[in-house]
Image (cartoon, rainbow, N blue to C red; front, top):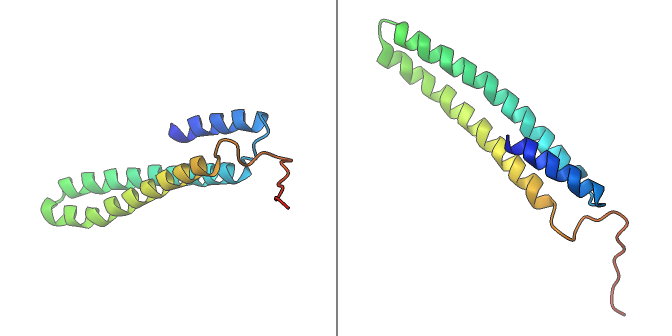
Length: 104
């Protein structure tokens, strides 16, 4: 998955001295959201199967729409967290022990 590839890239950056703590937190949160989305996807599948098996599938499918929307939002949140993790690690920034100087 994308989050696994980003985790691998963060490992490589960490070995080069880049501070990746904030990015790792974002990735961990994204993975938790993906786990949540997986569970919600199973619930959506079950709700759809139940709707098709009902006497009034059209009415029952209307009840599934909010579940689908909720699942979509969780997936989008996971994607946003991965994007934030990537943007937090910019080349040349976040080096550990990097001193900042100001012109006098």
